[in-house]
Image (tube, rainbow, N blue to C red; front, side, top):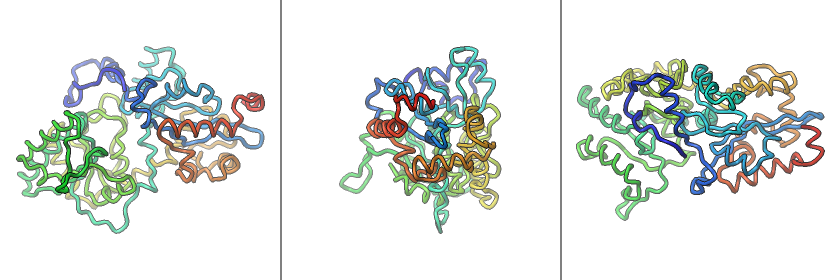
Length: 420
């Protein structure tokens, strides 16, 4: 993670600059991991939505994405013989990677992309995909939990960082109570492993950073110095249990102004729970793309706690109106993810026998090739039925996986060189 962070953008929805200067500001920071950031190497993800394939004398490269593309390319320079390398950063900036084939750029914004490529002509051949790692959410794993009542009014899944603007939620809860005479049952999941319980069985937040403790102090002050009466704070929920929380919520709220593709929004809609966000979320970079799909939630029209309270009320009072999962699966889910990748990457259109747009996941050659090479159907591969091959984290597991692919395809041998 390097560069100049956009602190002046976190709470200001009206940046008074020409749009190109705003785009330049966004790209001053990247949420990627680099070789000299050893303390982050255990968090590096390698996601393989499509493995390399060889079938009937034909070889087709796979595709992976990572937030450490430069580092991995320097460590495994031959990896491009087997994969298209996709770089992403955990925010809305463009990747800093110089040698990636693809940038997972969150949104389709042709004007911004054209400006960027004119500014950096050495990157003119990089393909920009309107996707990010959050779009790889497994819609079968993160799905409505059976027979789960709606016991939570508002759920927020957000680490106590400045970018998340937790104070907006706290103020909205107070306004809601004053206007509608109801204290909302609100839960906030922080996603923090370091928080432990003390001898009294209470969570001890003293191990948090000074910034995070400051955010908790601010929330406590807004909420009458008794945060626990307004918000049930849960430091961490195991991933396998998250669906129960999403399903039990009447809405999931995000109060950021700038983010990458926020995972909790994808997960909430996949669990059939409507979302509430500010209309100004990522407004300068997402072009014409919507964050909320049809009947999937509501925008708070202004960056004010009053507008947020009204949007929350609209969702809670009209639960029957929303069909988030139905709309979400028209646009997202893993089969949509790989179909979008194939749509934007000409290589697959040119090299996959009998390629049809929108049906990559059903292609018979792909399924035959994956079955032959990995003894699993492509659908099962895509949905992590062999997760040790499709999604690993940390340099040790990444090293093992890349060496597996090298070994499988005889990397550096004359035979593979001839095929490629």
